[in-house]
Length: 324
Image (tube, rainbow, N blue to C red; front, side, top):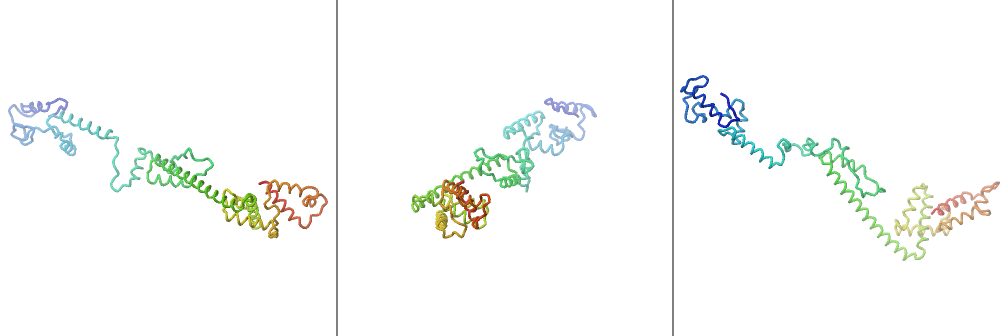
């Protein structure tokens, strides 16, 4: 017996042909295996097999056909119903079924599931493959925290983060850092303005001179402490109207005043404290001109005086002052 699924009702014709004396029996003989019945497709009296019972279907397939309600008499009705079901599924899923991915397996970490579908989510193979761009408004003079960026890459890859998410996190962090910098600068300026107003009330028109004296005194003390040029420059830089502390400035201004009065002359001499660069240059010119201590000590044939080291230190200090 054969079934032609492409012709509606063909299986019924086949059944009728067999009942009329088809292969293996004469006309009027009852079908093998039973006495026949009014409904040859109900399977109760040894009637012909139904189309879904064909040997080309296994048990699982027959079970699915039954569950889907496709075990109808005409196989073309089943095909029509199946096509409608697929079309409905595509409309609901908005994608062909073979393009869908399954949900994480039981006990599977979400990050591992996302990495298993890395191509879909665009997850790089290695942490260093994440491409991170610095925000366009990041100042060129500002340093970039490469170590933190490397840590972010590691964390992003560990959790299966998409590249777009990582870039957004970087942008938010950078924006916050820039905002904090502006806030700090604003707060520092406000504090400095208040400090300078306070010193201005105390020192009056001597404000600039006392600031210079404080810087020079700090440099001399640092030099006596054996600090190198870089450290001395850093200390002097702190003692400015842009970054100083009022009490620290008062302290070193007082030290400078004492040095200017030779109270601490043994600490290396105080000549030049409170001088402006122009005054320092004038003093250097005097010392290096005929009759000046440095000129007389270094002219050809002259013997170096006993205090030559002090004269040389004085020249060095004035040179620094003259350079601002």
